[in-house]
Image 1 (cartoon, rainbow, N blue to C red):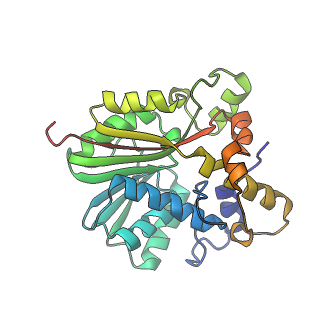
Image 2 (cartoon, rainbow, N blue to C red):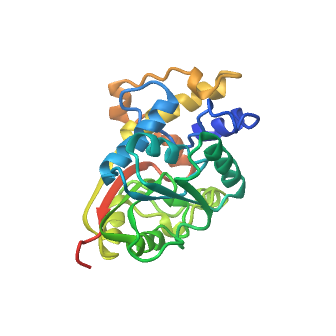
Length: 278
């Protein structure tokens, strides 16, 4: 069984160097498309989400569940939105994120607020893009966040979510997994598959929704990296070269660790647009 995710190794390895901007504090599983390095895989997932949601220069972006704001700083540098509002309810991560942002000289364009993603501190119709990068499965609830995102987005604005879900047809009830999910702050109301996910988004009023599973490009690389870190002594995530073969991707190798631990064995990218006329 998977003991820790790659993001947890980042947290543990860099806990004495959180303000060192040379250390990238990514916390996601990564998109292992054309890379063998963890930080590149994480940046690849952030890039994929930004491209799918149509992030553009001058946009007002909301990042719901922002972690240490590594994705926000990456998006600002490479997509040039006018501003990013980052939401987090973890005070420690907020403190570190604010200090890193200030040290980077980006504090005039990235604002970090302590709040839940289901209660965004913005007026109706004020954001161009809202994203949740591997965080919405923690929200209480994901559906409430989707409705809140609809309220806050401008007509024509877009929502993008990269998230962990159960596979279609997966068994829902299991006492052991429920216990792990409870301790991992994963509400049972979020345990639905990608088909129901799209229905919920459409029911909230969004149009032009698209949901695609990229599980084969996520779990094999993340599992191989976690295995290396568990057995590699003092290795840091970017010390490890992770080569994922086509056959490993086809079999989605390593996904069983997530399936056994919490039942979240699908990884999806969802994009949806608020109608221009609501």
